[in-house]
Image (cartoon, rainbow, N blue to C red; front, side, top):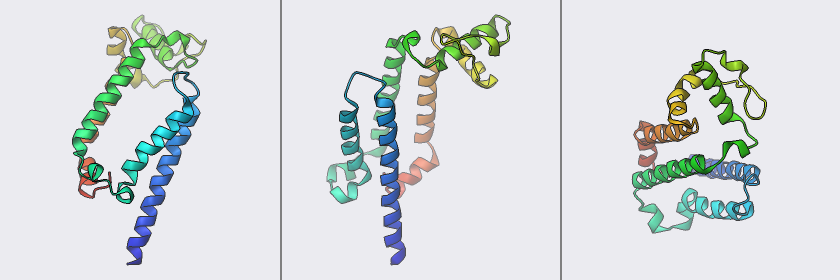
Length: 176
């Protein structure tokens, strides 16, 4: 019997740590945008996440009877759509981050027969990406935007996770 109480306490503690870490990331990176107040995002995220993380406490039948796979597929669709819209409508040169341009100029140099690690990006930096990432980015460079690599990677890994044994195991123990 003491094991069950410890296990419940450990689970609750891990859920709180998970929530807190995500809140820190939202707080840190939320100030980089001016579309919505970061404090409003923190409140909304806390409320929605709390319902899912602590569904046993809230005793909400709707959440307990959700089709998790359908919810996850909807989540994947929304994430991929949002990443696509952000990638498509954001002017990369206005960003103070050079990840995309570092990959872009490195692939451009590689395809022109130049050494990719000496190419200068829009913030006067150089790429430090592994050669494999440059090779993976070539199809997306040829499509016109290396940012599409992020969309593909998100879709690929989220759908692989959906079909994995780990996801099915989590469904069986009703963790979500």
